[in-house]
Length: 212
Image 1 (cartoon, rainbow, N blue to C red):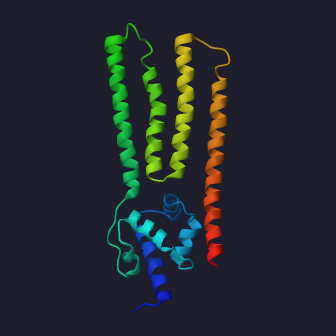
Image 2 (cartoon, rainbow, N blue to C red):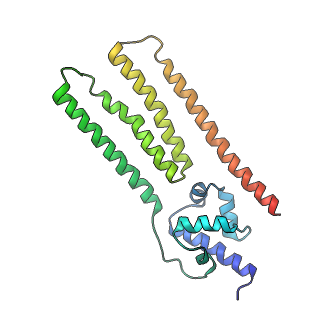
């Protein structure tokens, strides 16, 4: 029967095997689990050991049982979560833009006499796309994706307001200031992203010191 040190080595090896089988870097896995990549690195080197709750979270992510981490056997189960995380949002975006294109065609064919700004439909598609991407980024726990998608919403809404106002009211003095507001919101989102990452890093550091 394996002793504690042997179990730690087996678990460390299995974490690395499953991560590689899923096509993830240490940083990518850390981002999805809200841990630092340094924590993942220590687990895989056997210098640190995840608690049972973290192991359960890892097992759920990899689609295995917690006990599989304690068994020294080849990792045969593979999947490509990154492909899923890309293809499903792209499919959702495709459906959204197909709907927008259909609305544009209907507007041009049947309502062009009354509504000559049909092209604005595609402008509104920018913040809509950002909302869709945000939903999937939250579901997949992709903090970088959340930052990017929120930026798309930010600038998309600003652009939509600007062009809609210009299209219906003409050139409005000072309207460009809306992009200054968008810039401020972008900086705030970036600062929150940085602070969030630092908070996770210090949280893991505190856990380590507490265990020691």
